[in-house]
Length: 115
Image 1 (cartoon, one colour):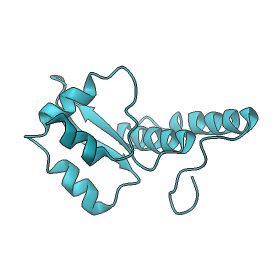
Image 2: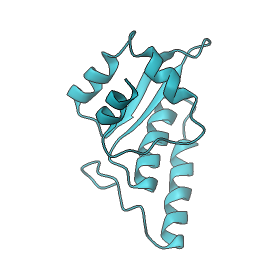
Image 3: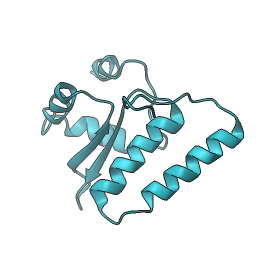
Image 4: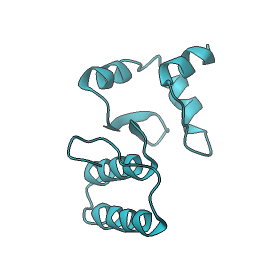
């Protein structure tokens, strides 16, 4: 990730990617605070995959979103995402059950296509 918070390239040599992954592991394991670890995970995931945005939903014991950790979103985008609750719970249930990360060019279009 560069100084402006933009993700790095998703390519790179295997050595560069391994080095980036090792650095991410060290940053993530440096704290026991859930918020700090979650922030490092989402920032590192963005960097390693070259994505523009990332979100981790922290869920409660009944698997409902309790908090969100975002990376790459503007404050307005974050407010709009949080505004989906409680009506947006179905969307988060849909996303929660994925077995792999969702990658799409336009998330709002993806959501509209769901109906």
